[in-house]
Length: 300
Image 1 (cartoon, helix red, strand yellow):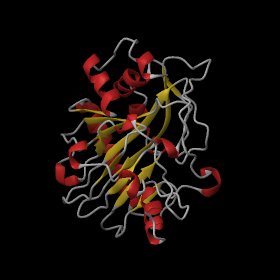
Image 2 (image 1 turned 90 degrees about the vertical axis):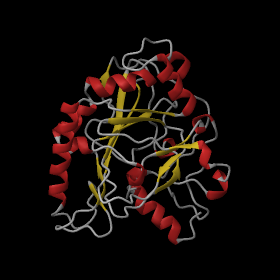
Image 3 (image 1 turned 120 degrees about the horizontal axis):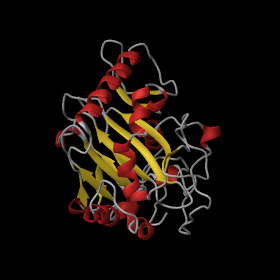
Image 4 (image 1 turned 135 degrees about the horizontal axis):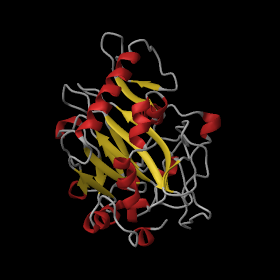
């Protein structure tokens, strides 16, 4: 579904000003958007996930471990497809609170694509270089939105998501480095135009939400605090938007219509999108490993 069509549909959670801000700037931040009950459940589920990780000694397709991870001191980059590992995550992803937010920016019929739980452990957890999301999982249009929820909140020194304001209207840049490695990052020469005054990095308390457009250039800095920064990220699209490559992160609910009705016709946007590797063959190690591998070969 295209933005001009979405805006003709009645809003559910957002104001018209907020919806237009999302489409103009390529993101929208909302403080306290998630209820205390859900935040408590998500925190409990996250603690369970961290406890289970104590027995994990290497990346296993679910856990992506950070350097220094051990049973005594778990350090995690990510849990792939959290909805497959604890029922609370899927119940939340499919809940009214989340799907209503998605519906206001993708249209009344909402389809789930994938999710991840990023931890960004404290005391120096790595940042994430500038990149765009949609080249990793192209769709027939550019409706996909990532709804990110800070379950513990996020302060400026924890490496919040940072977005280049309005970059959703600009070019899609290659995510391959000069050696042909898929780097999940833009080449430095392509983004030399980005200035500090173009970047927004909203923060807030538990339940703060960031809606991120799939074309927006974004990244994050190192977590300089002692506390982790868990961030649940769920990707939705309009029901009439279809992925046409394999998914880097798959799960049992991919393609589920979580609100409204399935589509009878597909929505198309003719602006081209670079194709990623064939994830079904190549596998997906996670962006930290891909960025590290690209850097080791000369990268950007």
